[in-house]
Length: 319
Image 1 (cartoon, rainbow, N blue to C red):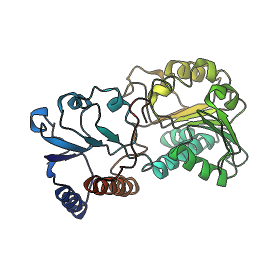
Image 2: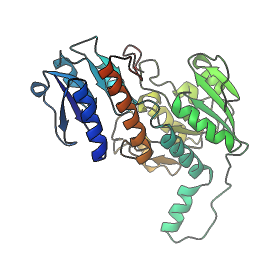
Image 3: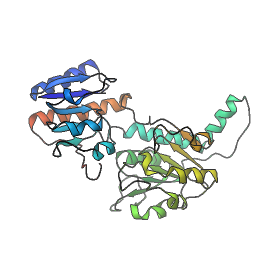
Image 4: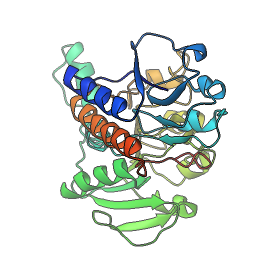
């Protein structure tokens, strides 16, 4: 039986380690170049997939027992049909918290400190002030999604003097770095009277347009929305309308409902919006890559020894 690897950013010694673990598990390693397109006929005797593989392959691989992704979001894989419905899916949740939390904070502070406007002035060689800056210190920030990414952001922002509200499916205990916790059915209350709403949600049917026109209406003219989870969790049309009408202060968007963000989207031209092409947690970033490698190595070692895997995804709920 085979094990196939694709789209992993590894050093030669790391690749050798994975090869050794695969062979010790009785699996023959098959490596794909990042730009290669795997074909189902090549993978009929493949027991394990590790890395980034097209979801449509899954319906054609009855021998597959386990797929390990190199990323955290697995909504497309969960929505796919699997030839072997008993196959395990594991992700790399927890590998991207540091990088994405730093991105969130960077984007938020750029808007707090009016940096896009000053960057425009620099291009036009204008030496002039553009308005009143704000600070993380003394602000109130709602974090929607209290997993690894949301919790890491809360830790940093709390240390900088912010009051942190958290939103998750059920309220429960209040963890460290959070001042309040709201259940998701009280999201409207959680986003009322806040300086920022930071979103770190997975893409699932339950989270689709979780922040919609009704929720945005509870925000005010100082609120900035930051989304680094999935584009489907934020109603872009409602967001654009609220921004055009200046009912909220701005947005930082690393994800979009359709990626790439369509060229006709009004969000491209708004001075109070920062847009990046889904880069807040890239696999090849050093800190992320090392975490991904550790997760994959541990799980492959466990698989070879017949031990339970970590980071197992419940495909019914999407994470």
